[in-house]
Structures are given as C-alpha cells and as structure tokens.
Length: 278
Image (cartoon, rainbow, N blue to C red; front, side, top):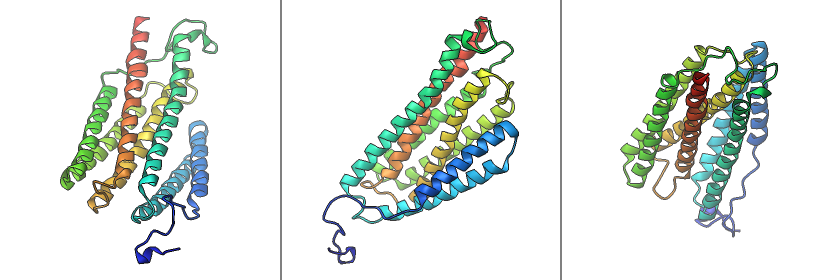
C-alpha cells in the first residue's frame, strides 16, 4: 500500500476509513448529563449538573471538531465521494430535526384545536384561562427580523467565498454570529419577563417553552457552528472547491430560520389571535 508521504492515496478506494475515536461515546455521556441537568434545573432548581453537562458537551464539541478539521486538511481523506456522502448525511440530519420539531408543533396544535383535552378544564378556550400570551409584535417580531437578516448575511458570506472575496466572507460570517448572539440574548430577556412559568404552569407553558426553548438551543448550536467557520475563514481554511463545513453551517442556519417562522406564526401570532377572539 502506498503511503501519503510519497504523494499517493493511502487507500485504493475513494472512501475514508476513520480512525477509532473516543468522542462519540464521551459526547453521549456529556449530552445525557446535560439533559439530566435540564430536568433537575426545571423541577428542583439545581444548577450545577446542567453547568457540568454544558461544559462537557462544549469540550467534546471542541475535541471532535478539532479532529474532523485535521482530517479535512488531508486531500486523500475527503474525496469527492466522501464529500457527497457528507452532504447526504447533513440533509438527512436536517430531515430528522424537522421531525423533531413536528412533534412539538403536533402537541401545540393538538391542545390548541381541541382544548377540551386539557386536564381539569371544561372551558373550550386556548390558551387556558389565566394565561397571558406575548405580544407578537414586540420582542418576537424583532427576533424574527434578526433571524431573517442573519439568513441574508450567511448567504452573503457563502457567495463571497465562491467569488473569491475573502473579506466579504469574514464580514458576512461575523455579522451572522453577532445576529445569532443577539437573538439568544433577546430570547433570554423574553423568558425572564414571561408572564407564566414552565414549572407548574400547565400545558400551554410546557408546549411554549419546549418548542421555543429547543429552537433557542439550536440557535446556540448554529451560532457556535458559524463561529467555528468564522475562525477557519480568518485562517484561510476554506476554498471555492472545498468548503463543505461552511455549506453545512449555512444549511443548518436556514433550517433554524424556517422553524422560527413557523413558531412565530403559529405560537406567537396565531396563539395571540385565538385568545383575543375570546
């Protein structure tokens, strides 16, 4: 078998056989710790387990991405066939994320369209009595504009790369990361001023915080994803021919944008209209 030091591919096939890695197992334990921490924080107000889980997840993300970036620099590993497989894998991952959010929308519309299913409630009204919804044209609308603008800036970054404009690439990614951080900060502010609580608040707060909260988590993940792409771009890590990492981040970010539009229309706008009619 020829060696890469001699300028030849290490394998006689176009596929990349990855080396054994500890990151999948460690990431599973880290994600489990973070999920357990969320449960403890929501029901018993215990913070430290969630903090430990988040720190462990970030550590695994750093280590795993570092190894993947090292692999991507080897021209014999990410062959055209491998890059095509990566694209199919990212598309299937986004499809699975779509079904993940379908479950939350299904739960919300189940109770919104058939409110008599709400336990201990005989009133045909949604949201349940005593729930005051958010004004959709306040912070939710501002966050909608922020995400729509961020979709434009990440597209600008991608087209700048294809046009050979390194400055536009960096500027577009930097603006997208800044907008993503702004969205997260405004949503945290919105949660702090929420007129209802997740714990003990009933079915409406549960569906609201689960749907918008998991979307917020995806925004944080997407912002980190784009920040990694920003640092790689500043170091010349992408070329017009080889930039799947940036493409994957852009696809993921556009998915996050679309999900938020559905959340804004169904939960914030339509939900507020339903209660106004009653």
